[in-house]
Structure formats: C-alpha cells, structure tokens
View (cartoon, rainbow, N blue to C red):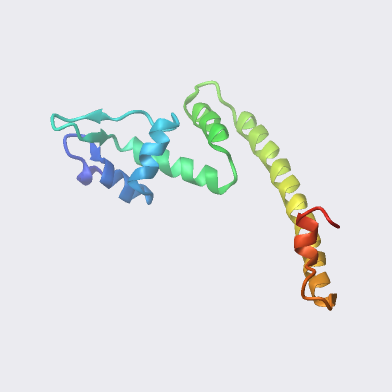
Length: 140
C-alpha cells in the first residue's frame, strides 16, 4: 500500500478501491463521523492516510456482523482506547448475538405467517378474495 502513497496520502478513489467500497460510501462515513475528515492538497483533493483503508475495512466487517453505525462508532472508540479490554468488546458482541437471535425469531414468525397466508391463496375458489390482501387490509 505504501507504493500507492503520494506524499504520504491516498486519494479518495484509491482508498475506495483498496477498501472495496464506493466513493459515496467514504463520504457517507465521513458525514457519519466514522471516518475522520481527510486533509486536502493544494488542489482541494481529499488525501487520506493508509489508516483510512484499515478503518473502512473495519467498519464494513462490523456491519457485516450486524453492528449498527452507532455500534460501529463505539467499537472504533474501543479500538483506539488504551483502557479497552477484550471483555469490553466481548460484552458488545454478546449483546449483538442476543439481538441477532431476536431478529431471527422475528423473521421466523414472519415466515410462518406469510407461508400460512400464501397457502390460503391456493384454497380459495373465488378470484375476488385474496387472503393476503384481506389480512393487510385488516379483514382477517
């Protein structure tokens, strides 16, 4: 990556390429406070240090594990805090596991309800009545 540096900095396009995200994603992360505002060169181009690539990769991996942007911000804070212990991070991971399990249960309930409504469609003889639409309209 050091070969990509121009005077110690990477362009926004190069950071996006190395981190495998789009340029709008980098700008979004900046606005959300997840990525520090980069310095700018004389031509007003954004210039990032190589830590930006690692930080964006960290953010993306955390999102893939289901962490919200606010939770990612907390994790980033833990990443740089000298007093952070593995137990601090584990506590957040365990809370996320519980959250994911609750979402899975909710999705399973939705799945059962939708499957039941869809199976009712095949039982109806009238083309005018649709159990799914009836349910959504509050008629079931």
